[in-house]
Amino acid sequence: MADPTGSAAFWPKQMIPPTPENYKELARDSAEKLAAVSLEQIPAIPVGAIIHDNGCGAGAATATIMASVSLEVAASIKITGTDLFKGAVEAYRAGAASSSWPAEGLVMDADSLSFPDETFTHTIGNAMIFVGPRNDGVDAAKEMYRTLKPGGTLVLNCFAYVPVLEPIREASRATRSTGALPEWNSFEKWMDPAFIANIVEAGGFEKGAVSVQQREMFINVGDFDRHARLVWSMRGMPSAGWSKEDEERWDEAVEIVKRELQKTEGFRLLDDGTAVVRNLINVATATK
Image (cartoon, one colour):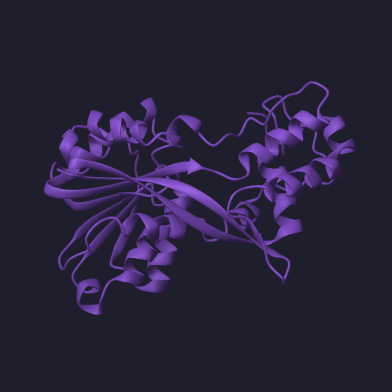
């Protein structure tokens, strides 16, 4: 992938820089809502649960768990957040300290966990199985199975529909003489519920113990004009990198993103200029 901030890369003057803060602005509260919708598919977290927040990032799943449990449960559970990226774990640890979570954060590869067998009662993989682990997540699923206790619960999710995918493709087709499409995509093979179910089963979970539910998720993306610029800046770059043509036709591309987003199912433009978009997610749950 071309680095838009690298010294040799061309960077359109209109582009919003790809900083962690700007990516966070683009995502809004989608990680927390993704976790909340997913956790609704399993029984409530019980007293004494030992939870693995796998691919924890800054802690969206852990925060969602802590917001949903009673004080009695909160006082009895233990959560371990792991992520391959040191910066994510540092953010997780900071969140745990500031919010008094019963949690620790560890740098760890989801494909090769260092925990003993049968460590956890629950494993949550929130927005992780489709973006990091190798081998389409099968190796990570095997590790999740290995580290769950008998009777333990697995929760994994992935996107079945992402509203910005077709808008950025349409903007690419309309404004690039080469027709180059964005490198970023919505991991389309994960849209089929059977795909994530097969990954979980390949990890060792019995077919009859695996269930996949499709659920809607609505996100207020903030100021719609700003959101469209963020989308094109963060998601519009092709694998070869930005070109002078992209800079020259930048405003046109952003307007196409706005137009096409407004056509997506569930889109709502609110009176205050913010917008609500609809995502569809696959939530896989399994019992060991």
